[in-house]
View (cartoon, one colour):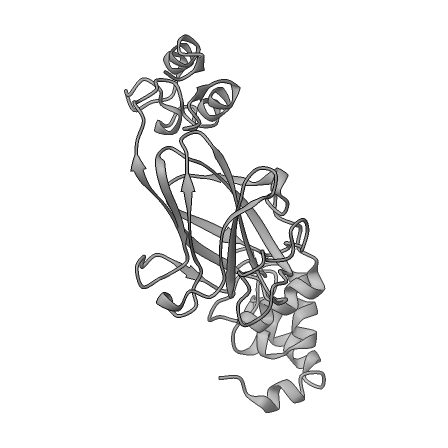
Length: 275
């Protein structure tokens, strides 16, 4: 637990703190953690950011780089906004676990929760990021932050989740789920090939990392050769997916475990809408 005296006299200790930081190699050490990640050791890899944070809070260079240190870093070191800060940059995710970072995110479009979804902390989202789900089944999808049902799940901030259609219309929302101690769990109806936007945000200034889980339940359509994105269309998006997985199994359209020129031929031969 933090020593209150250390926090009170942080300014007076700044000079000594800086000396210890550099003596320990904690500030600016390339092997150290990113300044926007928390951990049990002091300091972080960006020397200037680390020094500025430790000038505010000596604890960050003498004891550990905790969530308060990370929040200082967000406030004074100006992290870049993530690529999925707005709906247009939504990250496509598929069934399974997916990671989240709200570091650097802003309150942009749809910064207010839909009516009836508000939790005990209100309906405003100060930080949010966006994901895209292209349904591969006709049935129901679920996004969960609950660690009780999915042990890999965690979240360093208090999350709210909204699911929207492409035009912004909400089709699902959850803020405080009583079945899992307030963690967000949202379900919504899905149709094969339809795209949904998943907005993940927090009510306050705190940001962080997390791992959520996406599940789909329902009837799966017949397999469609060449459809690497699962949108029931074989088009340029599948070529892009193939090229991004070149030399690995991740763009494999032929089933041989490798992405190569044979997969390009397979995608082109299946071009168009799936049967």
